[in-house]
Length: 142
Length: 381
Ligand SMILES: [Zn+2]
Image 1 (tube, each protein chain N blue to C red):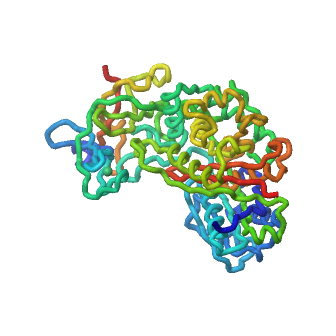
Image 2 (cartoon, each protein chain N blue to C red):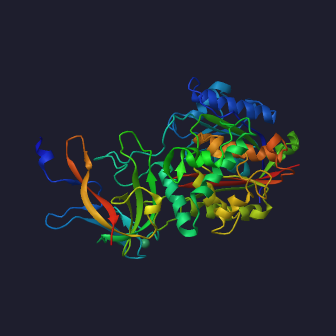
Image 3 (spheres, chains in turn red, cyan):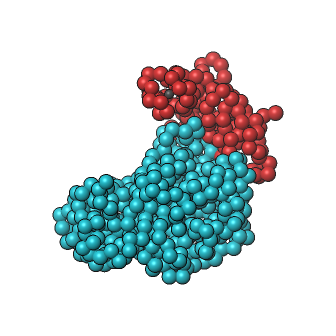
């Protein structure tokens, strides 16, 4: 095993933050002028055009399922079925990801159901150098 | 206001799979058909717009001219996702409208592989598909449809009925990829790709081309108005900011914006339109666009498909060509092929699928990312 592979996992996306000390979280970027929320850094607001008004904020780990699809056919090598979900986080920010811990059956999934964001290994996926990645998932919350 | 612009010649090849032909050959076929339809030669064309997406860096328009006549005219190659063909048509319209030319050519052409559209997600790190949800097109449009289900209770069966209808229409269109009836049980029972879109609810990836000759009013009068089609409105929009659009591409707002502008430009309303070709890239999408284009009130699209109003013989027939679902969806050609379908009805030449006394028709395409193009066309004579 290479040195890199033994190191701590990297974030699957830039807006997933892994602090040195503390729990991983999702980061949003909020426009101070109009309040709109973005994933990923930017300098200018796409809604109102304000410049230099964007600040990083910690997104909530709780939210509600907005919509979903159950994916049966994907690109070669991608395991199916899985639930592709769009979640509105409490306090702002909409994030897309896999909904886990539910049967992939439309009757078992309801719009608006409460979910929580959990952080796990990225389904064993590694990059060319053999690095492991940490990703986020949604699961039903009580 | 400057003078009106007319479609004088327009045609498309039968959509299909042509792996042995080059992209330029496919484009040339439609271009020659359109010239013949207009009764003109390539020497009459003053400028050309060529829409193609997958080989957008290959000077496809010039390649087409190398097949049919290199006359030295200006050529603009354009790419705008699935709105590519309509964008080529619109920019050709703009140039004539501005008075720069009297006779121009717009060509849309595409050669597609089989399989899923949409990227595997990101070149850095690890693949995101199936890890952070799905960015395949069937899933993206499934989620867009599910938003309608969430708001209004639209059912899997209602979405599926769109496919039943459009496949039925294509049995009357010899230029469609397929001429096969697909009953409801077959559509709903087909392989599930991304719930609620089954395989028969996804547009067909095909090769194809379509082309149009656009002329100024002066030229139309000189050459004959009998089969001319007047362009009453041409509108292009991009996607205005929406709360969820970073993770959920929004095909609704840009369509509503374009529809509003197009109806205003033409001075008509949805009730004045006799037939529509809209962007049914997936069955779920057609339901959304019923409301986006004002064919019914918000929340009533499910009832509209149930009522049969959008089926041939109905109040406002939609996608009589078979639509992208059954005629096929060669990305760069689709926008002009839709205009061909409407023009054919306005000319009274649509055979068994003809809308009686069609006077006014509307075309709509969406390129995800996003671009929306709408044209309103009118029978000229
Ligand atoms: Zn702002």
